[in-house]
Image (tube, rainbow, N blue to C red; front, side, top):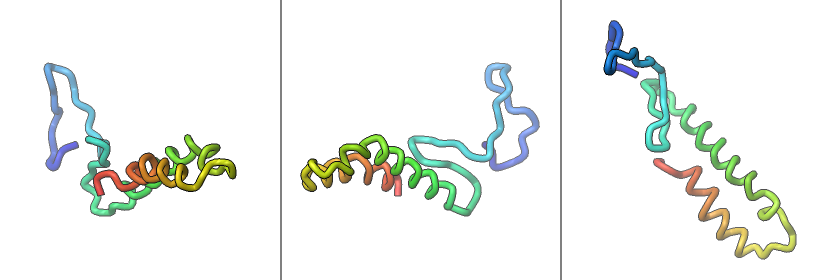
Length: 83
């Protein structure tokens, strides 16, 4: 990713791939001013972590307090990271 036109960037003689966006430290980095891509990505990650524990979170036998602790410690941080 570059902010100007680069003829052929090289690193130790190897060409570097030019991309429009990439994930750095858990955050989507892009020159696009529209932040919807990062938001969609965060929502997807939160749903993925929720679905990983779906059986536990949707069980009627599990106390609500335990469900709340799991949600607040796993799902919510995935959604809110770097916001």
